[in-house]
Image 1: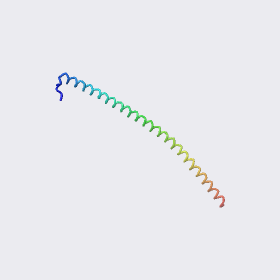
Image 2: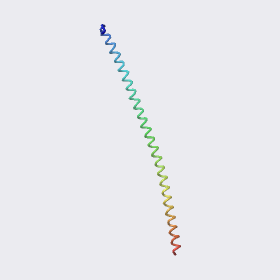
Image 3: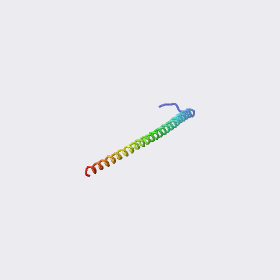
Image 4: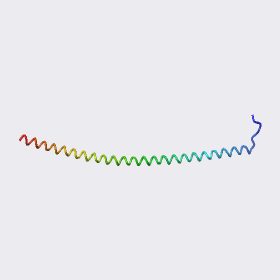
Length: 92
């Protein structure tokens, strides 16, 4: 056991040191919070851009598919009509 007693100036010095450490921790926590907010905002922006790109790509793909289906159905109608006319001529 120590025989030296802490004086008031010793306690004030310890108090000041603790306040400094708490201040440093508060700044570190605030810096971490701001960094996290920036990272989250960057992630939101990136996700929004990716979704917009995906939506644009899907719209183009759907338009191409619509055109392809229109051409295919039209071709089947023309061929079907031609087969019907050929069948009518053969039976007549």
